[in-house]
Length: 255
Image 1 (tube, helix red, strand yellow):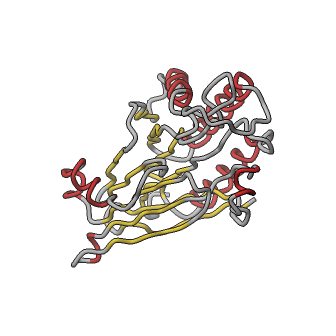
Image 2 (tube, rainbow, N blue to C red; image 1 turned 135 degrees about the horizontal axis):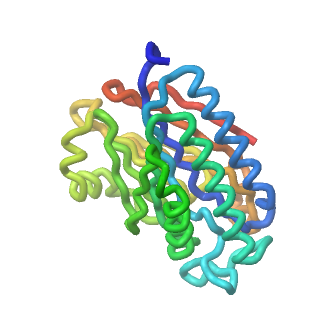
C-alpha cells in the first residue's frame, strides 16, 4: 500500500452510553461499525495514524445510584458494575482491532457530563491493558479540551456540553503553538447525538476553524423523546486527513 495516499483517521465515537436501555448489544454494534469503516478506509488509503476518542459519555451513569456525575437521574437498563465490564471488554476489543489497521494508534480520553469519574477509571484500566503494545499511545490525562497535530492538521476534541460561541478564541488562546502550526483546524464534539458542522472563516479560508458535531451509536431514551430529538440517526463516522491537504474523505456507518 506504499503507493497510496498517507492519511490520519479520526474516530470520535463519543456518546456510546453503555448501560442505557436499548444498548444491551452495543458492543456488537461498535465492533461492526469499526470493522466496516476501517475496511473501507484501508482499501483506499494508507492509514498512517488513527486517533480514537474514548470517554465522552461512554458510560451512561457515574454512581451506584444510577445517576450522572452531577446527580441527574437517568434511565438505565443495566447496573453500574455490569455496565463497566461490558464497556471495558468492548473497548479492549475495539482498540485491539483498530491497532491492526494503522501504523500508530492514539487513544484520546475525554470526560463526559454523564461519566466524568468512571470514564477516567475506564481509560486508565484500558491503558494498563495495552501498556506493552508499541504502536498504541494513550493521552489519558484528565482535561476537558485536547489537541493533536498531524501535519498541517489541528484536531481539537471536547465533549460539547458547554457553550461553543467562543471556541475559536479558546483554542487559539490555550493552544497557540498548535494553532500557529496548522492550516486546517477541526473541533470534534458529541453530546447532542446528531451530525452538524459550523465553519468560522478568517481572511484566508484555509486558516478557518470548523466544529464537527458528530452522531452517536447509542439508542434513544425518554429524555430524547421528551425533547423531540427523535429523528437522529444512529451512526459512526471515520474522517481521513492528509498531512498537507487536510480532509480528503469521510466514511459513514449507519444502523
